Image 1 (cartoon, rainbow, N blue to C red):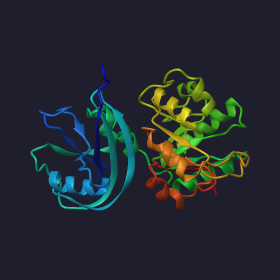
Image 2 (image 1 turned 90 degrees about the horizontal axis):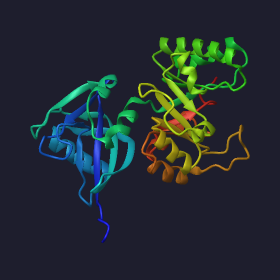
Image 3 (image 1 turned 180 degrees about the vertical axis):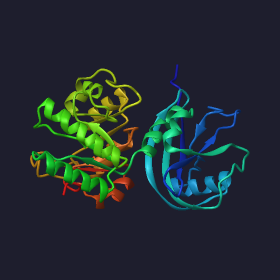
Image 4 (image 1 turned 135 degrees about the vertical axis):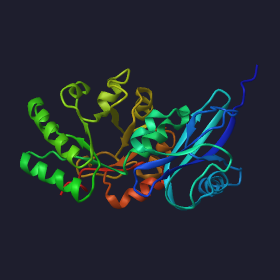
Length: 318
């Protein structure tokens, strides 16, 4: 018996962000189609000759009566259903003209970012929810011995660079010192509206109410299931396809992928470069931050090849 050949469907979708950056537009699927009644990011199927952005512009005009003025790639997701293979080509729309309304009778709604989790979405949309909620920059703290200097540099990054996602990495500290630094870091992050992930054993979340855990690649490969509750962010360091697959199995919300360039801290590790990075990101099915020699000037290029953005120590730690 021949195996069924799956239909391949290319879909473009938009995360349309409000002017204040606090809300995103979602639409409800009609009850008479696949996944009817669930919510989704507006968009639709592309014709064979269309590019992702070109098709999305047409779809948003037809569905919502809006014209895209500024957009950038957000995430590309390959998703297998029993009868079809979907490629979701998702763009973040920052500027548009017109007032969106459901021209085809569908319900549309502006929803605060933090309330998106309360709406039912098709499974293929779940990585988009994560990508929409994440910034384009991920600050990793430096190994700073002086506590006063550490807090001063962290606060500078939070205030001047507007860092909104922070990983506390402090390998040289013992557990007591790490806990003290974690509490001080959390207080500063809360003050400036930033989220904090601890690069530590997952059990530490029971003692410090941070926003999540960032797994080292070694911890990632040892685990068999997600080590923390769904309500917390789970991230991981990855360096190859095997680790990306493992991150997907554990249900990681996002990852870093490195090294993109040669770095002073690991000069012996060969860099993967943008081409190999793009190939790996294409099948990751979760937001990926480029790490290794990255600066803020690389963020747009990283987005163009499918990344969520860039992660860095050196570029933020001044």
